[in-house]
Image 1 (tube, rainbow, N blue to C red):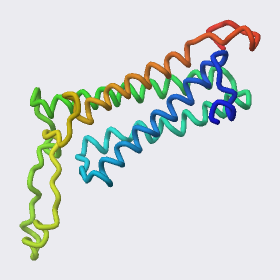
Image 2: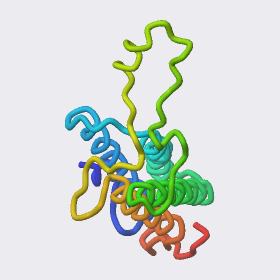
Image 3: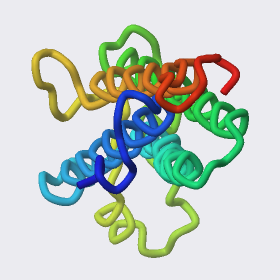
Image 4: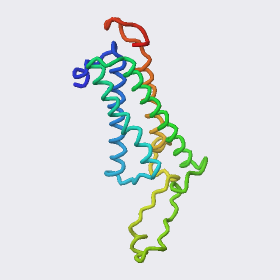
Length: 183
């Protein structure tokens, strides 16, 4: 259905890359929300920060796909895909940083250490303490095949960055009348 909607084929790598980025990025976000709202794993501050690149990459990938469909300038499409790649590489870095904190290879910020907030100025301190959820970045609440969600985010982000770079730099097929990288 998506292929028919966007005329997805190998002759237009920008379209293929954009659809892959939008679909896989949306699946990654849905997975994060599933673990948060269905499984009950509350996200730590770094988990929430790792979602931000998806929030910009998915709509930008949809705009690239629409741009390909409506004949946008190739340089604009290439720049958008390279921007997605940069965002996903940053996200991979955040995932490596987060996984390193979970494996105790290095320490995270104070916000990630689960430091207890200061309640001295609050008159109802016991009530506030009871309602405060402290989610630590240095504890992986779930692992599969030795990787935490941060580790899987690294793999997904690197894959999306690779797809974006491929889409930005790949040559179009001769079926579209061009074979230069500058398209």
